[in-house]
Every structure is written in structure tokens, then in C-alpha cells.
Image (cartoon, rainbow, N blue to C red):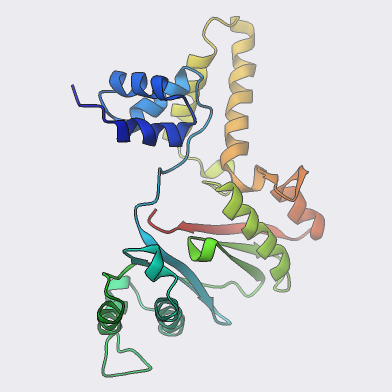
Length: 278
């Protein structure tokens, strides 16, 4: 049997919101497997939902830059929060993100070999090495995504906690709804949706949720089990799908309803939520 450490119990406690003793019992039953322990707690009805991760293990910034046609998103990691807040570090992140939006590299590896436009004697990776020497910490460009913007869409970019969380929302139907897109991006940062709409929930995830739901309603009359299951699965979809979540600024409507109320042809079609170290 795997040894159950205090750190493991604390992580499960933070992720599930369940008491320490129950967390320990679940980990023992799961032989130290964190995901299995979470499932055990949920089947027992002790945890209705769990966080995707425990405490952050990396520092840094997630940053976005857009041109007329391109949106670039980048995450750069540092060893400490002290360096992540350093103006040199923040300028480095901004500079390379701007270049990525201009050159639209096919991959992060390709991007790191590019000549740095402000100093062609350096590659992007060489520029990174200069920052390491200057700031005295290991600095890594962890991920990069380039997105070609739709001409009939609006984009909202919201940075939270100094770049610890970055959320972006695309709303199609007009290119003048940046304020609306920004507001929904704030919602994404706060509510952490996993999917855009129910149709995107993978079959295996639906199956697992149904299994958990069935475990929670054992003993119920057969004639009501179907309706209860349907209700639980709908509640799960409403919780994890952006368009069906209750809008944080007005919980009388869903995000989809709120957007539609601003214009009949408006529709949330895409979102990103990056958390540093995730």
C-alpha cells in the first residue's frame, strides 16, 4: 500500500473542501491515487465538485497581445513571484508576445529559434538567456498559442492577479462588442468553465458523471431514478459549460442569455482560460 502523506491529505482537502479525516480515508481506499480518491468522495456525496489543481507550483505570467488579425497568447515561467513582478521580466514577456503576434510561428520550438526583431543578433531563446543572467533565475517560455481572429467577432482579454490568470472570449456577430466580450472574459476568470457547451463534454466524462450520480441515488424508487439522473447530469453541464453558467454579474440569467440580450445575433463561440503553472 502507498504511504499517505500529510501533504497528499492537505492537497485533497484543498481540492475537495472535505474534512481531513475523510480525505485520509479516501486516499487509503484509493491506495494514494488522487483522482480515484476524489471519485470516492464524490460517490459518497461528500464533494459535489473539485478544483482542477491544488496549489500553484510555478510562478510567472500569462499574457496576450492582438493585432487586427492575430491573437497571441503566451505563458512564461519564473522561479519566484518576486521575479514575475519585476518590470524587466514583464517587458520581456510583452516583447516576445508582440513578436509572436507579428510573425505567427508554427510552434513554440520554432518561435524560440527566431531572430529577435529588436536585436537581430539574438534569437528569442538568446533573449531569454539574457533575462536569466539579468534576473538570476531560470526563466522558461512554457506555452504559446496563435489564433487567427474572425472579422465578424469581438474579443475580450482579461488579466487577473497580475497575469496569474488570463481569460479571453470570442463573441461572433459583431466586431464592436469588445466591452461585452471583456465582461464575459471576467466571468470566465472567476467561474473557470471547462467546456463551451454541453455538446463538447466527452462521452467518457458523461459516463463517469452518470456513474457518480447513480452511486448517490442508490435506493431511490425506480420510477424516479431516470428523472433524478437527468437532473443531476443537467446540473453538472450547467456547472462546467460556459454558456449555461449563471452570469456572475446577474445570476438571474445564463451567460448565453446575457449575451443574447445584448444583441440577437451575438454568440459566444470560443474561450481560453490560462492559469500560470496549470
